[in-house]
View (cartoon, rainbow, N blue to C red):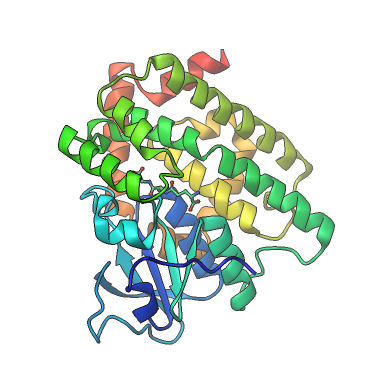
Length: 306
Ligand SMILES: N[C@@H](CCC(=O)N[C@@H](CS)C(=O)NCC(=O)O)C(=O)O
């Protein structure tokens, strides 16, 4: 049973039913939304992330309340959110007043607590193999951040000096487990050398090649012919690098076909893409401009693979 977190905030304890603190464009939240969809739980009412109004505190049957914590407006770098999640990252899930953090733990909890598609096998060997793939995906989480920020979001994701001071202050009260202070200080002042981004890209490229080779035995999904938590983790990496211009089909064709199978699932269409299409298109457009200028992710991958 995943750990129930103690919260410094009074908000989680005031909520009944299911509530997700998330952002449409963030891979860590997308995988949880995918899992919610696979469990037959649909997005319900949208409320302000910190609302405890009587009309906001209760979810409808079979639905979860959507509490957007905008990474663009920097809602996650506020005192209110830092009290809910001390690392100041999304997602966070509340079920009947209990708070769960960490997307892997959240999905494991949902898998135990709800019906629908089983996402973690009961067979110990399959379960261990699946969780190893998930751990590998977790370790590459920082690489996704470096690659998508550098080749996709660009200036949009930079923090000004006031925002960085505020982040540092909040981090002193929490634990900054995701090392946001260090990351934003260098990212926002363009202090990371190009080689840092290329090294993260190299790690992603190597792991995509490994998965592409595994899919060579004809299995439908990453671990077997059944969808699993591993698909939830890896497909969001592909979604996010694709929108930044990574030529997935050309370099990892089996991985691309697998991704298409995931992409077509109703859970992906409704819960992952549903309200993400506009942002997805905007980032794609930005990436296309970079590619035209010869400085895109497409060129970086081609150079790396040459
Ligand atoms: N290990 C955490 C990672 C959470 C995480 O890093 N979330 C990202 C979005 S994918 C975030 O909120 N980032 C805030 C930022 O980059 O400023 C999990 O899987 O839940």
